[in-house]
Image 1 (cartoon, helix red, strand yellow):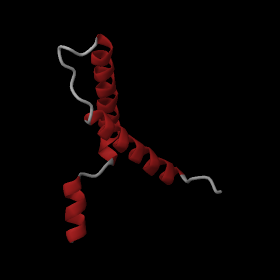
Image 2 (cartoon, helix red, strand yellow):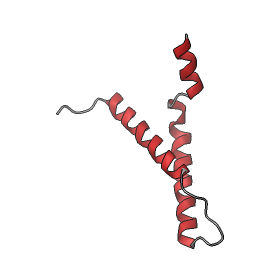
Image 3 (cartoon, one colour):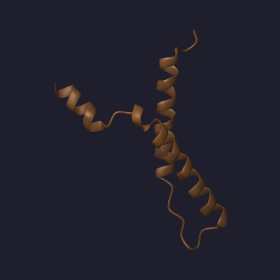
Amino acid sequence: MDSLTPKEWFILGVAALWVYSAAVSSLPQPTEQSSTFYTWFYAFLKRIAGDLSATFGKYIPDTADVANKEQK
């Protein structure tokens, strides 16, 4: 099996970020009955997802941009 090119690694990384972001977004928000650990864990995962999206989001095209390019 051949190794992946840098572009393929990047695409794989973006796909992993997208899946991670979707998984974090699907977590229920902590309530007053939630444990301290869950409250911390939720905030921690949200922070990481936000930092990754801010860092790599400029490389991910907006769905509206993709739709406009397809129509041209």
